[in-house]
Each structure stands twice: as structure tokens, then as C-alpha cells.
Image (cartoon, rainbow, N blue to C red; front, top):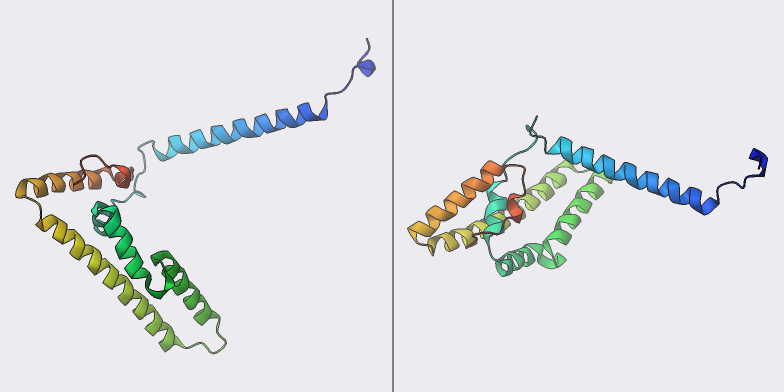
Length: 163
């Protein structure tokens, strides 16, 4: 049989091979990215978790949910309020009659609301610490220190030994 007589590759087979190649390249890219990220070299971009984030995660789920709902105010949720705050800033920036003083007041008000939220989180957390024995607080401090030492690793996902 001559070369002209051979049937060509079917379209579905060409598409399957192209999809397979794309999937292989994606997997190789993910693996290479993960290897680079977790290689241990040049970790200056990794920071320890903020104390505020750590203490918030230590509160029980119901307390966190209640605090977020309170922080949401009339927006319904904390996240919706933050989104509305961002939209308000953008609207102020786009306004043809830009008012710098009004923008400063808006930002100050937003900062005050965040501060009030943080203060409530801190009060709830200190109350939790206050109810612990000295040994429980020392063990908690050890776990907190360990999380800070792990830096870029999934410190917030570790649920072992939580009080």
C-alpha cells in the first residue's frame, strides 16, 4: 500500500492527543511550581501569620460566625460590608466632584469599624485564655509559637490539640 493510500488520522483522535498533551503540560507546570515554592530556598516572601488571624482561628466556629455577623452590620455579612466599603471608595475616586476630606472620613470610618471588630475578637479570645489553667495557657502558647515558626505552611489548617 502506498503513502497516498493510507487514511489520515481521525479528527477525534487528534483532539484526544492534543487534550492529553495539554493535560500533561498542566500537571508538569503544577509540579514544577510546587517544587519551586516549597524548595526551601529564598523564603523571604513567607511571613509568619498575624497574631490577629491566629487568635481569630482559635475561637470556636459559633463565636467567629457571630462576630462576623456583627461586623457585617446592615450589609448582612462581614464580607458584603467589606465589598460595599471598596465600592464606596471607588465611587468616591470616580466622582467628578472629588472630595478628599469626605474620602478621608470614609476611610477613617472604615478603619474604626475594623478596629471595633478586632477589639471584639481580642476580647473574646482573652476571655477564652482567662478560663484556662496556667498549664493550658502554656500549652497553648507552645502551639502558637509552633505555628509562628512554621511560617508559610498551613498553620491555620492544623486543628490538632485545639482547645
